[in-house]
Image (cartoon, rainbow, N blue to C red; front, side, top):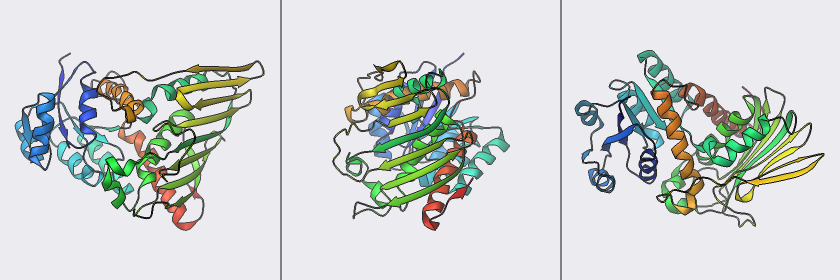
Length: 340
């Protein structure tokens, strides 16, 4: 099977790590870059040995012979770039969140389906090593049938320092972290029937919400509480960007604890084991857990492009996670539960 040639759209903060992660995956070669500021594309191209750079996406797509594109631009440009790319290539990867409005997400999915184009979403959170191991522990049956879970991603990490544009978003944490958390919940426990959400703004210099609490009632009868915060409040166990998860079952409890430790407690006692992620020399130590997960996510997306399997985070599936994001905003606005 020949190596798939692709282009990256967007050369900002995350693109450097996305490209580095692609270099860890056999069978894919980035041959061109697009950024609306050409000098930024040139700078990233120089770092990664990519000579063909563009500041016009139409020109790139017209000139290059590509198998797929990887869109890593701001969310407001996703719909336009996906629609454009779908006219030229048979597979499109789009960064999460899919789009800023549910109708746009639905249009992107429907348009690509009508053109016979695979639309895949780069949703890497579920690919974190400890989360995959927690799923395996739950599925083993050691704690019995799960009935309640708590998923927590709260941190004092100064996220606005690296990505100051996040301050200007009208909707922040539910789209930024919520899209990750909801996808992880669905990966672990399936789909939800209803939800109730509250939001708060703790930082005074931002437009959107930086705290959200969501209670999900799952189709399998579980209750899942999702806690998210970029409030900046100091925390004793603040190991950004780790997610802490507690799952209660009929026979015991499984916990994803700080430092990648999974502890399962049953009548026979507690068994704890650490499951750290792979270490890559290019990963930013502050984001190492997330950066490692990009590699496995990319590998799964490429397998989907190559028709070896259905990629886990295909757009039709990710649309279900995005519906939870927008239903959460509806719930918070109206102070009521939303039936899905």
